[in-house]
Structures are given as structure tokens and as C-alpha cells.
Amino acid sequence: MSKILIVDDDVASCRTLQLHLQSEPHQVEIAHSVNDGLEQVRHNPPDLLILDIRMPGRSGLEGLPDFKALQPTLRVIMITAFHDMESTIDAMQKGADDYIHKPIDIDELDTAIRTLLTSPGASEDLLSTSSSVDHGQLTMVGRSRLMKEVFKTIGLVAKGPATVLITGESGTGKELVARAVHRAGIHPDGPFVAVNCAALVETLLESDMFGHEKGSFTGAVSRQEGKFALARGGTIFLDEIGEMSLSMQAKLLRVLQYKEFTPLGAKQTQSTDARIITATNVDLERRVREGGFREDLYYRLQVVNIHLPPLRDRKEDLMDLIQTLLGRINRELHRNVSHIARDVVECMEEYHWPGNIRELENVLMKSVALSQGDTLTRDLLPSPMCDSLTTTPIGRPVKPLERWSLEEMEQAHIKRVLDAAGWHKGQACEILGISRPRLRRMIRQYGLASPDSVVQEMDDEEESER
Image (cartoon, rainbow, N blue to C red; front, side):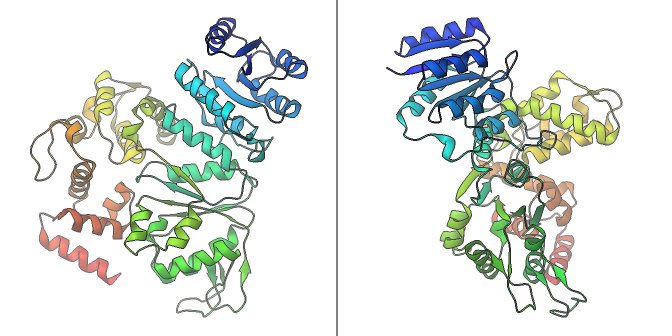
């Protein structure tokens, strides 16, 4: 029989949990404040602590380090009625083992207790007892179980030096995760330097990442430091790592192995202590099998993998996202759009969101800009959004949206974006959040063709010249 201590100011909630846990059976004690809970830990140490975050007097977050100081091996589950990333990260960094939202899912709680009481070791070896999270800088929101796991992982890995690979579809917010890891890490005041590995040709990417000496290539009129040098004492974020060439992958592998690099045209190597975070929207394991990505680099990069779910798999976060994005858009556009018509919400909840949060932000930005009042109405939405249940993908028979494959949705969306952009591939890439090489691969993969073949041929010739 395990000893469990519940610390929560909600008397009814405590009694309900006590009755349930005693039936498991566990020995359960109750305290209604942090100070009373600390006294019980001193005189009757429990095996597991269930600690509410917000209480009168000292909060659970404030008291958590004291509980861990009294009993370092104590397993801790934080509970809260509030859904915010900062509290989750803070709790995990201060030593919590799990984080559960109210109203409490009894099955989720039982699973967490069973896991913690049967697993060896405690989390204090991985976590710090202080937090450097800048609450004003972290803008990720989400109450879905998938996003809770993302927030927990950020809190667990941020304080360590492990390389992090962030995966997920375009538009899911991978750079936001990278910035969250940086700001919750050891050097939150250090530089955060982002590099888009698909935005530059190989020679320019090498110069951008590692720097160059004067005269090292045509146009190198002066010495220039690279992003790895600029990121010393901070974090370098390599986005779209899956688009990096094999030769550049070899150079990056050396940086990971030896923490050193050589600028173009230089004879001496330079060192870097920058934390490396990478992101990709492609299947790197598949790229490894196809020979397009080094296996040794892949395993170096994914020491810790944080996967961001697509918006269609976290629809319960939609209204929180809309509220957050609308607040930012209103400030940027100096507007005060604060209401959404019911049929607009229904359209958004039914829509598949192939462009994820980036697409949601673009839709809201355009709708707010065109609105004439304080309410978003259905006529402001892009026409395909509310017609999505009856629209058919290219060359496919009519069928309900829930019967479409992901490939069909992707094909239809890419075609729609290309048509809307007049087959201007630069604009289409910006909307889709992907690189030109990736867009060209998708066009070939799905056999897409512009209605005006001359325009397409001119566009292809222009790209080949680049």
C-alpha cells in the first residue's frame, strides 16, 4: 500500500480524490495549504504527492522546491484548472513528474500514479530547481492532451544540453517550440539564431552558417562571421534540416561531434558552445532509407524528438488559438474584432486545416482586415473553407471529408494555393510555408499543371537559372 498526500485548498475535490484512491487501495492524507503539506511530509513522508498549483497563500509552484528538498525522491503530480504552457514548463523544471488538468480524468490520474509508483528513479536528475521562463515571450497555447505532452517535454529537456529535433507538418509552430526550449534553457538571455536551410543554395548556406574570410569566393569583399559564431552562449535553430545537402550534412556532423567549424577560406577552426535545435516537416527516416540524409547525422539530431501534432488532430485547441491570434492581429492592425459568428466557428471546426496554424493565422488576418465591424462573419472566410465538405480533390469522386486521405487533402490544397497565387511559386511557397525544391517535388508527385503552360514553363526556366 502506497502513501499519497493530496495538497489542495478545494475541500470537496480532496475528499472525492481521497475516496477514490483509498479504494485502489492507497493510504491517503489531505492538506489544504502548502505549509500544512510540508509539515505532513516532515513527519509522515508520502510516496507520492498530488499538488494543486494555485492556492491561497503559497502556490503549489512556489512550494514544490521545498517538497523536493525535504524528500528528493518524492514523486509529484501537479494539478490545475488553468491551461497555460508556462506553468507546465515551470512545474516540470522544478521537479514535477506529471501535470494533469482539472476536471481530473480519473483514468489519466490512475495511469500516472501507477506509472510513477512502479518506475525506478526520480526526475530530479533531469530537472532544475529554478525556472528562467520569460512568460511574456512564450505564446504557444493548447489544452489538448497532445500539446500537454509537448509542453511537458519542453520542460524536461530545456535545462539539459541534448540536441532537439522538432518534427511536424508545415505551419504547426516548430520555431515557437525551439524558442520555448531556448528561453526555458540554461542561457535564456543568450542569442537565438535561426537558419532556414532551404532558403539558400549550398555555397551561400555554408557561408551563412560558418562564416567566410575576405576573398574566399566571388563577392566576399569582407570577413563575415557565421551563424554558429553569432550563436555562442545561446541557441542555433536549423529549420528545414531535411533539405540540407549531403556535403553540408557532413560539415554539420563535425560540429555536433567536435563543437568546431571552419569558415570558408580560413585555416584555423573555431569552436562553438551553441545549443543545436533542428526542425523538419519531412520524414527523415524515409530520407535516410532513400539515401538523401546521413544516418549518423539523423541519430545525432534526434537525441530528443518533439513532435508537433497537426491542427486537425487538436481541434479542442482551436478556440484558444483563435483568441490568442485575434488578440495579436487586432494589435497589429489597430482593430477591435472581438466576436465570431456561430457559423464561422462551425466552418472552422469542420475544416481540415492542411496549412495548420499558419493557415489559421492567415485566414484570421485577412478576415480582420476586411471586416467592417467587430464581428467575423462567414462571408469573410475563403470560399473553399465552408465548402470543404462537398469539394472534391483533383480527379477523385465526391465523398465526405472524413473519407479523404491525407495525400488527397494535400494535393487539393496545394492545387488551390497555386491557382490562387496565379502559379507564382514564390508566393505559393510563402503561403504553404515550404521551400521551392519541396514545392517542385510535390507538383511532380501529384502531376499538377498550370492552366497556362507558357506561364509554368517561364517560371521553371526562371527557377533553373537561379
